[in-house]
Length: 115
Length: 110
Image (cartoon, rainbow over all chains, first blue to last red; front, side, top):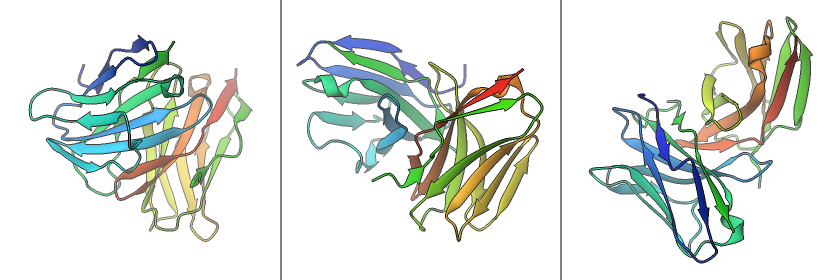
């Protein structure tokens, strides 16, 4: 499967725990984006990363959320001390370049549920 | 502030007829517009895009029209097929960030 791979597909956490969401981009893609979708809403941009660099994190909450895309391995979206409002579907997308109009290719998402 | 709006949450169309999905935006700096299709429990799948310097782009049964003066774009699907039933998201690009609408659920009735 050469698509964007996200795991886990479903993640259940209790309030105050940490959530780690993983994303492996498509082969040959070095640009990764994270989006969050709340129920009945569209996807909201969170963060844009290239290998080892955060390019734009303007959509990321200032506290408890962090993202990385190390030189080796998947991109990780980390949510510390989760709260009920963090329950959402988190989608990762990748693209091969920053060329204008280059479509982003999405994974199937991680559905995070906070008890 | 919602910069991309899809005002119709749902649309039902008979098989074989045309489906027209609409999208409005507020930011004149958007440089590309894209349509994605999404099935339940899956990620969005890219369908078709259009540059802000064009007014039409066609790919098989799918055509996107852009009216910059009205800040409006539409996706036409003809003929519609039952397999087209899904949620369609309009997205606009600025500096490689995508801004999504809230989606329109299309149901194609056999």
